[in-house]
Image 1 (cartoon, one colour):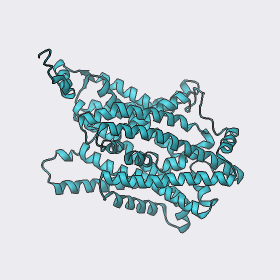
Image 2: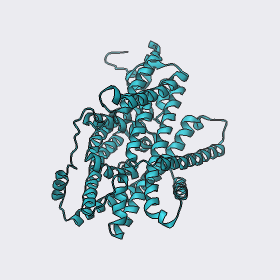
Image 3: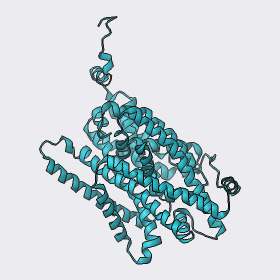
Image 4: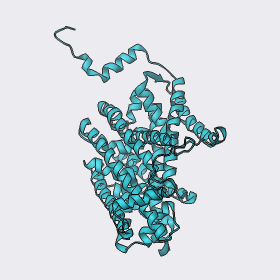
Length: 464
């Protein structure tokens, strides 16, 4: 239960805390379509991916690709995870740091780079304590503060406006904020695109993500791990509904108080400039609580994946424990520096809807990873060792970018939304098929016997 509860903080982060309420002004409750997709995706993780991970007893989930296809596919999968997690984690980190900077530290004349450096230093020091167990317990504490902040803000704004829950929903409905289903096929927010895209984003960003899965596979057995994921999926739907409700309340509050701010800046503006000091303090605590589970877990998982999957540290017999520890520390510090540089780049870009950036980045980077796992699970073909695998996984996102940039002109205003990830995975899958060959009968038989040991049991009633 601790793993399940703590995962809420890791999955949601500061982006959900600030950016999801901000989307209500432009998309109403349309984001809930994506949440429904998330919900379906967690069942796929629980009943397809988790049994695979437990059966193979994996430390790194990308070891599956090594066992199935060899080193090139293995390292390619790990590389795409590293790129995805670096960009996603630093986008989340930037959002929270920017809020703290704009509304608090800028008035104290603290430069943005200094704020980023200090917060990254805090996260770095935090990650040195303990392992997965420590992260699980601290994530639980931080998730508690984040959800407490959410509930307090919802209740206080509702109370300030003088609305009950029913009156709030009626008022939001009258203003069109409760609209969920988008029936415009050409729109990037079309409900089928959003649900299917949300499902595959969950499979990619959670089921094929070392950071998220290392917590799940730390649970003692498969049944409890599946229970954890299913429980989490129901809680996530409810929590996201609360964030959308908060967004609607914020826009009602802004309308009543002539506040022109929209998007990611709305919640911080209302919480820090228009609500009492104790609410502002709760908001800051909740925001920081949303930051740490995401950033510290990402930094730890990236270090772990790079050392195990790319450097092969566990397989290196030429290094003693002291040298391995020094290597892990060096990699950890390098990733902290990469985080710093990426946050500065996001500051330079200065996009007002970070959640849009994260979902787009996920579409490009998790697509090849999804295709590699799907190709391994649903086909019996063998990939050629060498660079063709990496080439296919690089060409597919480039083709998707080209299609995304031109599809509107080609097809009368049709827009590609978050289903980009699925499209990317399909193109990668087709490319992998062309560079693959059927496995020989002996290879299939050998693999089948290893993964299905029950077939070796003899039945005394029918003999051998």
